[in-house]
Amino acid sequence: MVFSSYLFLFYFLPLALALYYVVPARLRALILTLLSYLFYGWANPAFVGLMLFSTVVDYAMGLRIAAGQEREGIVGRRMQRLALTVSIVTNLALLGFFKYANFGIDSYNDLVAAFGWQDARWETLIRITLPLGISFYTFQSMSYTIDVFQERARPVKNFVTFACYVSMFPQLVAGPIVRFREVAQQLEERTHTVTKFARGAAFISLGLAKKVLIANPCGHIADTCFDAGSVHALEGWFGLFAYAFQIYFDFSAYSDMAIGLGLLLGFVYPKNFDSPYHAASITDFWRRWHLSLSHFLRDYLYIALGGNRKGTARTYANLTLVMLIGGLWHGASWNFVLWGGIHGGMLALERFQGKDSFYRHLPHGLRVGVTFLIVCLAWVFFRAETLPQAWAYLMALT
Image (cartoon, rainbow, N blue to C red; front, side, top):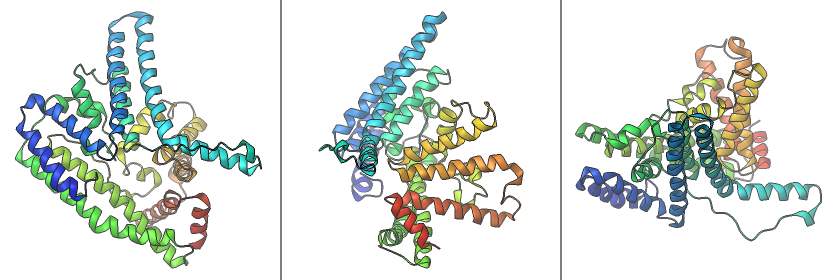
């Protein structure tokens, strides 16, 4: 079920709002959780069990971490670390298996085939189906236990409250990634006003317009160009720019609608995009693009790896590694890894050059243009199905 579908807009959403506002305030978290499970399980009910399993594990580990914090000494600290480890390993194992198992098998088979070891190929009749939104809810659920461990958030005593946080349908399938501490207070108590409801309806309308009027038409153009056997340079650039606008307006449309739906239910979600194509550098681009993801990677991965505290070389390595992982998070393909590597390399290069960056001396408008060009060329790897297809498309642009 997608936000722009007839089923969601004219059936699910009115029913959800009616039930949410009719029931007593104390039951709204339960109703919202059940509605979210219905929304998520519409395509495949089995996926609900997977999300519920992740929810139960992280809820229990959050309480275990809190219990460890109440005990003094090394025993309490070990309890906390063990609980955090269980949470992280469980979530990453779920994400790794369902999202990257097929990718790992295919990569292994391609490698042994390249060496002529056909007998070593691992043929399997089973292909893993990727559950919708697993990249988002595992990150959200995992961020809760990390924040509790770091004492940035208080543990949740009520399981329904935590289940509501993990499963909230407005941002369940495609973000933004809402960290627990950002909505902890709202889960317990939030306001519902006509002004907030009206703002929510406006955000939904804006997002729907972006999706239907801009993203979808741009997508048709991009699909025609990228799926063609070959294109001329002018057609290639036209298709590339169309895809650049498709992916931005598609992602930002979903985020706008998610923010709007949250407002209808009394929640205020953080902004996820801030005019990224106005960026004057790749560093600036990542201060504007998919903010919830970039902040998550910064706070829970880049800083955990040492950030910029371990020396210059380690800083560049951390930037590149984080973006490689960020690329792989977007999709199980070497194309996404290379896309992340391009952005990571550019971030490291800009940090290395500092104020002497090769394009920082340009006028602001040209800097924006150069940045947009770099971002667009990287999008080729994001959109193409395979590396050979990406290289062929890049060559067609010349």
